[in-house]
Length: 320
Image (tube, rainbow, N blue to C red):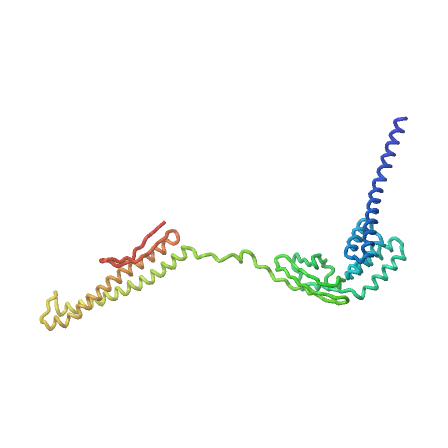
């Protein structure tokens, strides 16, 4: 019996200790909130509204109160943040209604109505076609798509609108609004971004392509020179045939005949020399072109002119 009583006492004591802990936490927040509020009020009385607004906001976060919201609205109003002040008054109205504080609810309504005509309103018009992943921010704060096309109260001053979407180029604009002014920003159709694969740098021409181009040039040029050599060879044959008819085996019947055919003999020798050189060069060039074509791009082939006392042609070198 004694043990049962002791257990009941211990359980009761534990419950008694748990309740004060939660109460102490709420009380600590309330004390901190009150301290911040008083500091904010002291700064506001000195005209230091920028600092006071920050303290009122922190106090409201710790312990929401209608009076704090009213002071916060007044503070924002003093620093020309009219939209933020209007929102604080509206929040004060709602909180006062839930707490059956009609007097303060009436004060908050009147304050919100008083500054409402001075509000700057900004409408963000939705795009004609909504791309996937569309994100719109105003001064770094995301704008919900449900708020598109609606006039939103904003604080007077510069408003920066940024628009981004998947696989689209981002877009940004800045507008300035004054008290009571209304403006609309139209979200444009964003241009698609260029895929990375299409933006790669152009590649240099491969050695095989260069070799094939050289091969084609050699084949065409070599064939043309070879054809010319054959033509001059035929001309030389005709001249020698003419000389042979009058002076067979180099024996002319008269001095007059020898002199008459001497020029034909000179032309025949000239044509013969040209034919030999052109045929050789053309044949070598054509052969080099064929080799280059067949070996591209597996092998490197170099072609260089070859000239010495007894020969004229092209030197072709194959390499691995």
